Length: 321
Image 1: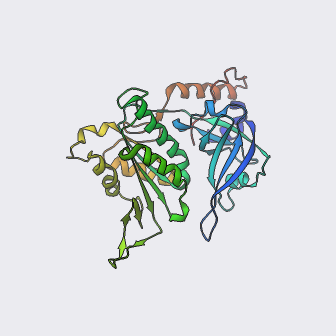
Image 2: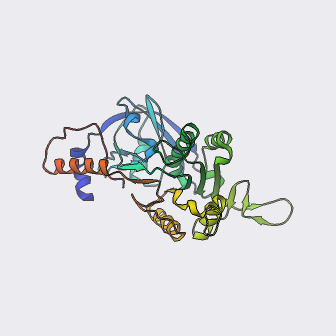
């Protein structure tokens, strides 16, 4: 199926051109550290109206002589949108975007067959590297939704508490400091943010040696065991087995973003802690498959296979890769 999608995506979707307006350096290249840029594109076709940034939808960039590549929209405005990405050496997709000059154009389309699963009271987020560009907008929306509509089982209800772990290598690899501080100031105890640095260590000044935790930063740590996840999330919420809020474990939701291999490992660790998460399903998953959107996607594939024109272009979507 993947091979058919690669060759037939133009029969299923209608890519359109957008112009690069600005290119902003977020993290400079230094030594082994790779650069991170925010690319701002014009939005003449109202992409922001149909690409549901808070639903996990993605922008598909048409890379010449290569398959379309998924990128998260890191910000949306009425006349423009942002893609924030890391530039990898010899990267086909990131290298292509890095080569686009101001005023140059690329082809994009929108994708997504997910929906937010209602009923969550606590949200645990684990983001790796630039994965924060997908998850932080979701957090901001959820916290605001809760402030406006309260907490409960309804579709418009928000989560009461968010614990966010951002896993990176060193302090020099992290960014969006102001956005994070603004959310912390606005929502207080409802939003706990922890930075986990795998390749950096911290020594205090009293001669007691290396610390692994200071100022909401965990030094020299990786999320590689279920007990660490339990300590950070369940013990903060009291939802551990035998804890005062064990009965609320069904109200916990999880969202984790990173490379596919890492996401699979995190998924396994969360399930080992007694939760149910998976790609597109699971009682504790934040995003689950939307059967209505999946049915629409199936119809589009069938039309493409039979070379029928697509008469319904209101919704543009596909299964997330």
